[in-house]
Image 1 (spheres, one colour):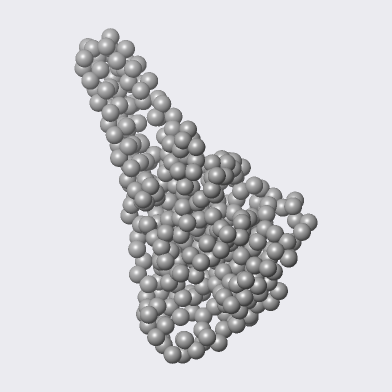
Image 2 (cartoon, rainbow, N blue to C red):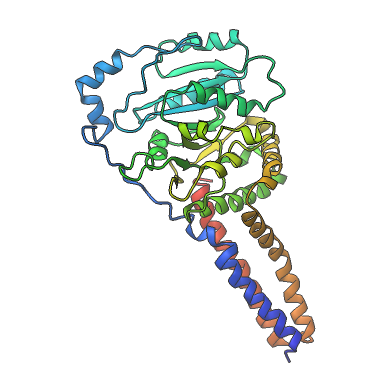
Length: 388
């Protein structure tokens, strides 16, 4: 026998499932449908990298470029051979061996119109030594954070220095501790920028920590949090509601940085370079998402990965109150529902005297709730964590 109280609880459980699919987990429905943008070269531009390299004029131009050092660099713009110019701005607080490995991987990229500004967290002498080692590489420029700047957030300060020194029309921010999955990383990240007639000003990429470096006790939680939070802001961006980004894999038009006064709103905050800043510059009409096996980066800090992951959570919490309330509220409700549904099923069964009909309906609703959640979680994980 089903009592009135049991019916009310069972209806509430059914409504919770509908809400979860329609609102709570909706971003995960579309995470796998990342739009591929077809790059259309402007008139007179080569259609491919091979065509650009086969052009004698382009070869002569490349051979005639001069290299960049720590104290001087060429005023010539980055050549636009097959796409808009890009500068990678990287804040390097790592060993030279890690930086060397990252630079060698970046130089293998097949995008022809980019250069690199490395803002090294070291003194002028060490930075000059690095610049001397790469003196023959025309696309690499080194600078450093000036002494006496310890009261400011060093990452934001480094990015500001690098963006001011950049030559490209677009900026890609990242760190040397990322593993680049493909030589098409930059090309695919820049596809939405190079679409004629609909060029985007902000491209949101994605990165995740190397979970094998995180202690086993914290690994499941780290993976679950990465997928659920990532699916939410990536999914919202695909629904033309961008509100957050990933500072390890983020492209934006250089002029946007200065038009919006850079990181001025949160210069003293621990975080904000990828969420507060993106929330200010990204709009439905100027943003795109680039999530594919060729663009998703893996962050590897070696033995310090677990500690850095905890610090990243702390950085996110430091800016949470300054972000839109809607996504955070929906995520909180989803978390509470995961705990409330079993309790509701037990209450429905108890209110009916544990009759078989109420028990069966409550059990079925509970199973459906977790099955839908698991299916959508796995769908999002396949897109955001390829190969994991």
